[in-house]
Length: 325
Ligand SMILES: [Zn+2]
Image: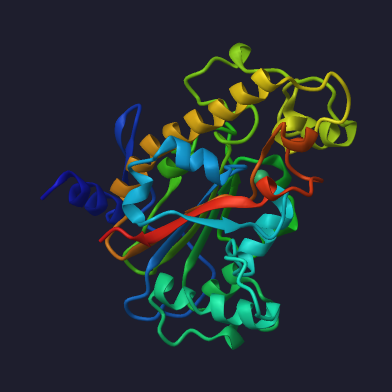
């Protein structure tokens, strides 16, 4: 038995690996509300969202591990900010291909049916999503366990986006996706759906190995976001981490923007190495999609960040998916 098989066997048996202490026993089966037996052969499905990861940052990082899923595509996010973008993801609209000559409603129905392959549910129909149009509820209704781990406070568990999830958690650190991987549990009795939002690639593009006092600082933050964040992240420029756009001077020089862009590229490289852990812990019959919720501006046309920005770089995102085995 290889390392992967051993890990998968432990996870299915309710024992998970821990970086700090080897193996930790966990409850063998968390209770879920009464729900039907899942369809035979249905897949586990994981969506990993690298917050703010721009398509060209992915290309520059040349991620080896994540590329095992398939060839990366340039796709376009429906929104330029975290909250609306995740809402769209959960109604079953992953980043689009911008096809010409199609109506939005037709594209939605056609694109939605790609979930047949992701979930291995050949009988899945768009009609089953009507009227709620909410993927987690649909999945609970056919027997799935549903889980979401987020790193951005605008998606915190008090927000309505938590609807339809058995587990919904805001991670302690905004920039350490391994926290989510360590919490993931797969069970033999029913398939699991996971949505993971991680912020290594979000401003300030910091990985967990970098001390906070080394992070770049940008002043001039809009106050509304600061308040939103105060009770969630007690940190000086948490508002920017929540996705605020800098509105006041000082504005940015090219060298600083280039440095920030390079930091995002390095953050992709970091996440790529962490994803090895995800691939190891996923049992057979798991489909994985990796993408971003929106892009990021690094000084183009005078913009920095994302949110209230109308610029193509704010919607260009990487998209890769597949089944490992
Ligand atoms: Zn975001």
